[in-house]
Length: 358
Image (cartoon, rainbow, N blue to C red; front, side, top):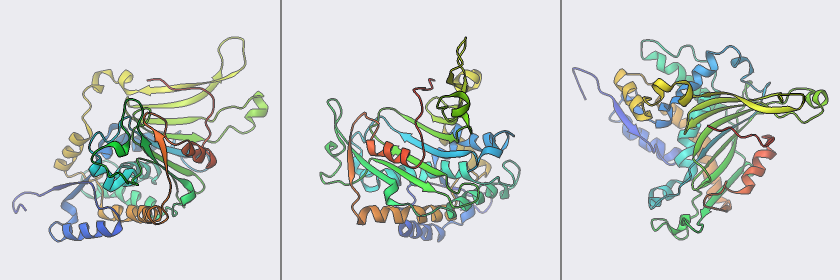
């Protein structure tokens, strides 16, 4: 390590497979590096829309007052890939979709979404980075244990064109590794008590996208007022592809009708920021620049990982010990139908036939 300048060590995931392996890894690293020079990188924290979450929440007067259990009915974070393991199942089979995607990428998105306002976001000094990371850790410490009846696991089968998961030559024939998971998380604090946070992630699905979908409570007395079932408003943050923020809004159908129709208030980055959209840095470029600047706010701290594994390790052990059934789903489908049933059971409501188009 440098004696005349500075040393910064970038560490890429995985950060262990459970609490025990993380602690072993952390002890080994701590024997060589101090925490202040370690930059644990998760490229999802460098994505444009993930970085935008805090600005969206705290720089807009009309949003923060309704960002709570009084107005929000449910929050759904979705990660979908439209391809399988593509001959690289050997690595994936050791981890599965929960460890590979949920415990790192999606839990980072969730904590940024759910955290309390930090003291500062921008400013000089290393302590600024800690304000954000402190609040993320507080969210993780408030998680309730995950209930197995609020978990759906799946593994994809082949179709006429694409092979199934076990047909990948790098995957064992008797693999019980999930390629799809839907899990409901609950945060036991005054802001989020009673709000289900639904996390969905899967491979070989019908489309590629990552998004945060906030479903608000229905307008009171709206069914009586308009003599129809008025859909709930939704605020959607499209992380990828086609970065966008849009609000599903109910308006009167144009013309002589008084029918309620759903449309959107749409901020599509490709359309609104045409001059800069094609020049957006990729996530790793942004994070490496932050490393050079000494800004750690978009990197994962050791206590944050420790608390995250406290959430996921009991869940993973229960899945393995109780041999939770893997529900087969076809390559290119939406995933197991039981996942949709779970989502509706905990409070998310599919309404109408409206679909946003990029």
